[in-house]
Amino acid sequence: MAERNPESVRVLDLVMIAVGCAVFAFSLVFFNIANNLADGGLSGVTLILKAVFKIDPAYTTLLLNIPLIWMGYRYLGRQALIYTIYGTVVLSITLWIWQRVPLTINLDHDLFLASVGAGICGGIGQGIVYRFGGTTGGTDIIAKMFERFKGVPMGQTLLWLDVVILTISLVYVDLRHMAYTLLYSYIATRLINSAIDGAYEARGNLIISSKYHEISEMIMAKMDRGVTILNGEGAYSHDPRPTLYVAVAPSELHELKEIVSSVDPQAFMTSFSVNEAAGEGFTYRRPKSYFVKSREERKKNKNKAE
Image (cartoon, rainbow, N blue to C red; front, side, top):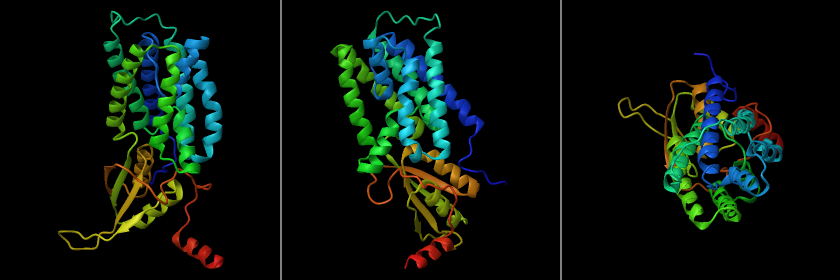
């Protein structure tokens, strides 16, 4: 089987990211905006600007993401950068389209139904985007930069950004609407977590492959993640079975799977939730070069340095 470049852009990913963005945009227009519900993240900022200054979210989504992508592009891999730009553009376009579709979802002014509908629809849309390695930019980029430069966990930054944005949203929504917004956020978060197996948690991964050296080299070079080689043994054959252990962020799980599959399509990989990951190596800094250095090359460079 031909090896697949983990940084390559796949048509299926682009199609599903577009579908997810369209569903998320539908939710924002016909549930959040129509029922005066706020939101967290950059979407929440665009809703604030619409309510206060009457600026179309289709435009502010694109404009606000431009400086964020420019600041964070070096911390995104090639594929992640392309998918982020693509997702941002598609979300802006679908927001523009949905706002001009003469459709009304009659919920008889029931905010409970509106918040549930927004949570289900928005959660599914965002979950699809994240499931296929995409993102719509926004506060995710800010969180990655804080983790890189300040050592603040990504989940913590995202949580506080959401708190700040939702607090500012009180300029145009009352406490009753804010309460239903929190219900919407809870439902959406649960669905997103189900789609990508944990939004803010780390993911521990065990990888068993005869090509464990190649896989570990690729992970360290392309993802800048530390890898541990565990000494294992086959229960039936009693043959040595080196096993790789690596912890990544949920948003990086897609990239890790691509790397493992590109090196060894027959590799066995299991992933599980990790409540917290801290310490050296758990950062979002990306290598400047996408070329993989072999162990021999690194040893030579180390010897020269010594």
